[in-house]
Image 1 (cartoon, rainbow, N blue to C red):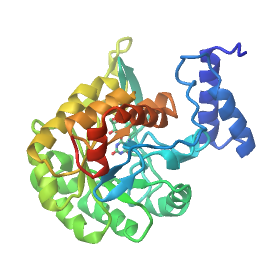
Image 2: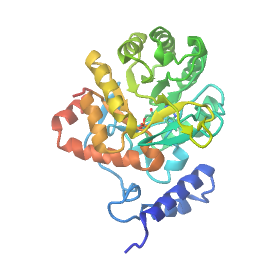
Image 3: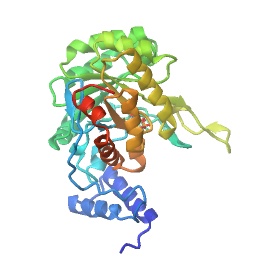
Image 4: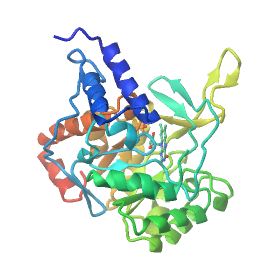
Length: 357
Ligand SMILES: Cc1cc2nc3c(=O)[nH]c(=O)nc-3n(C[C@H](O)[C@H](O)[C@H](O)COP(=O)(O)O)c2cc1C
């Protein structure tokens, strides 16, 4: 019988995540022991009572732009760190894993503080910190692919040339899909995010299209009045799929100082608070464009949240912020959705055939 409290188990989980991220875990046996310990919680208590060490038999796959996912749940960019989560679960069991945004050269990211809490979510301004495409191709992609995972590489850039360089370098490597993050400020679009300007967006996607045979997902920003002309620009430019949404612009103030909490002043809002808005973005896009594959993202914490995206017209989903609080959340959500799809054979059949509800 366990006397451990959920707080203790959570502390263990955090210790493992921190130790893994800092590279202080001695070896895989120690990491496994820590991960096992982190699983021990009182029944019904989150985040540690889900046994992520099992091998799952998925009943319901999906197909996104011709790529088969073994279940409809992927991880969302920037919230999945292979070196941290591989101690907790076999990442190849996800429908797909999406990497952090990769740029042509290393980016240092924004000054700290980079995150602020908000009810049912957070505001972040990490600034796409990453070691650059050359490092990614040597140190990250081969190791993630070696697990057997379906990998989506998220591509970041501050100019059209930046994106073109990264997409060209990825063309001959083993990433299964590319996800072009068009939310970054882009000098080729007068410093605005390309994702807010249909003309600049179509130009960018048209330029990238001939550089790769890999399925190209364009990840859309919600910081626009109407998503439909934006989606149309992507489709006309040659996108194979759309993913939505990235974060909403937001900020918080420290009321003791009267100053913004984030060093970058504003950041991106994510988490359960964005879920209803994200659903509306997917729904409106699906109504306007019945054929384009869509990956729904935003505030998913449970299988039910994911199922709502499928009813809104998504072919698959990605889980972001939930994984920051609980590293195994994406896998748990995949199992919950699999069980929900058991009772919805028509929807499950449509997904399996690459269609939607
Ligand atoms: C800390 C953090 C870092 C992120 N980094 C990226 C990134 O590098 N590229 C990207 O396209 N989206 C990035 N995102 C956005 C997420 O992938 C996702 O679209 C968004 O958070 C909404 O989903 P969620 O509510 O499930 O978190 C990031 C989000 C967070 C919270």
